[in-house]
Length: 239
Ligand code: HEC
Ligand code: HEC
Ligand code: HEC
Ligand code: HEC
Image (cartoon, rainbow, N blue to C red; front, top):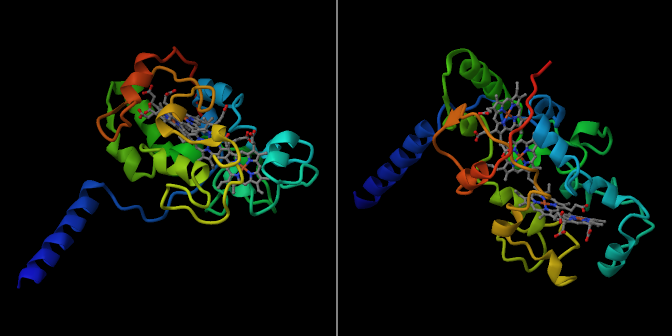
């Protein structure tokens, strides 16, 4: 009796959580590439394109980062740009629906792009468009919960960890092959501190002021901090 009522309560909690999380998606959201984002978010794009994330695939080319590769016992003359032990962390959505495929390398999926951090965008970008129109035409706001339900990421840390803390002996419990060759054992500068790293605007992108189209939770704890220091940005519209 006791166990079954605990079980019932647990089942109820799962059901309630699913209802609170909003409509269940018929299909998993797919990766589409940064062109879909940059058409509306010009300022973030222009800032991101200068980052090492944007240029991450170039590091896998022969002749690039020779000293760093030697230090990590890699062959600096080898082309690693289609190597399945490397490419996954240096592109967007590798091995996922709509993501980067070395056999057919879509140019908007090259490097660690928007969707690597913000999540696969096929569903939530449609919510952005609709909400943007409702805000502009009728000053109507949209709850962020709708974005989370459509697959947009607001916690970030697990996505960062999957690339930055994926090595043997890592403190991150999700670590699994293929591992990054650039670990704190190779050089302490490769130690990953999320709280510090996520505040590095030269590694993410500069932050620009939002008009307030989306409201409420979920919000990362640094959202207000970033917005309080954000610049005035340039917007676009999808063609
Ligand atoms: C049709 C235009 C359009 C497209 C396409 C689009 N967005 Fe947006 N997005 C918006 C608008 C409008 C807002 C609300 C901006 C504001 O409040 O100032 C927004 C807000 C955001 C926010 C902030 C959400 C919050 O917490 O308030 C993020 C992050 C974002 N977009 C990322 C993306 C990414 C990544 C993509 C590509 C997968 C994308 N957007 C595609 C129009 C678009
Ligand atoms: C898909 C894998 C991937 C994800 C996700 C990812 N990164 Fe990275 N990150 C990389 C790679 C690869 C590099 C090195 C790029 C190069 O130099 O080739 C890098 C570089 C960096 C750097 C150093 C850049 C510099 O200019 O010194 C910082 C800081 C960083 N990432 C922070 C983060 C944070 C914070 C997140 C999550 C919000 C994140 N990364 C998400 C793969 C990733
Ligand atoms: C699990 C994810 C992952 C895999 C797999 C991976 N990398 Fe990376 N790589 C990273 C991250 C994260 C960084 C950024 C490290 C930093 O700066 O803290 C990076 C950085 C680099 C750099 C730049 C180092 C520097 O100091 O500028 C090179 C070169 C590189 N990787 C090559 C490779 C090669 C070659 C392979 C395959 C043998 C590979 N990577 C596999 C995640 C990965
Ligand atoms: C390495 C991770 C990372 C990548 C790559 C990335 N972003 Fe972001 N982005 C963030 C973080 C972290 C925030 C802060 C979220 C917040 O304040 O709620 C953010 C915030 C935003 C915002 C909200 C307004 C602002 O400027 O803070 C927009 C819009 C946005 N990103 C669009 C993009 C677009 C478009 C791309 C690709 C061109 C992109 N992002 C690539 C991590 C990333």
